[in-house]
Length: 327
Image (cartoon, rainbow, N blue to C red; front, side, top):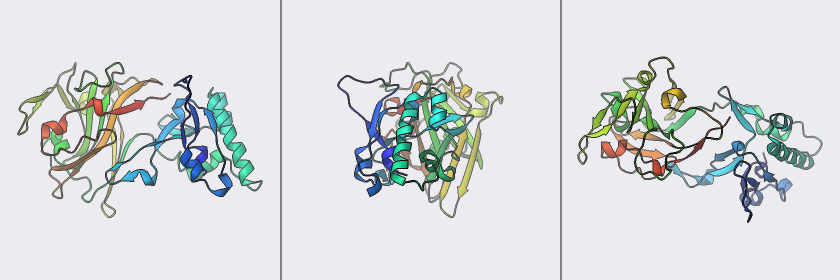
């Protein structure tokens, strides 16, 4: 699939622009690396921001991290827990007129450069064999690990410090200062790991209205209190339980964790256009599977410390990234 159709960058303007429909243009990299048939192909124009995603190219990847995320236009909407592909007609009927215009330009270039023998549209080729729509837009981690999904915690609340877990940190109050150094009301951390062989989700809140306090200590800090620490099923009274699926591939040293977390339990009221601070990551256990030896996150890069259970537990909202909810 020609990258010039989908890999984009912001087109600067001295007059500014509407953040809801940012002006985009095929990225310089996609043009420079285009195959002969697509040299000189440039798509430009505004697109509704809910169709902007981020991707990683192989050149951007490195062990346990990445160099940069690159913006892409993808004609996908999330509906009923699945990706729904938008073509020109669907986008126009739904009122996404800028996306529809972008897709029209893409289809015109596709037909002109592929010739009359082309059987699939550019949109169909983008989702060939459902490589996009087969994916599930849930919280998902794909972890490469020499000792996959091992954790030696003697209580669920200590899993984050005793081996393999996946982690979601979220600020549910969109009005909270983005540069806050400490967690405030609405900030939470969800740690998911194997407790006694069963996938278990624990929610930590430094500041909470409904208090279930627990104190944590280390060699440096004594009595660091989280005002609420609960297993997620307890947090919602068993009425809307999280669904966590874990697939462990010991041969290929890989774990896939997929979680459907009830928004009500996290204090989130889904509303399109809402922007929240968030981060997600992974803790890796040692070879014995009883202690955390490495922490790596999407946004927070200050995670080198693995010898102090209090500092490993603390949330750092100033280092989180931005998450936007869509319709």
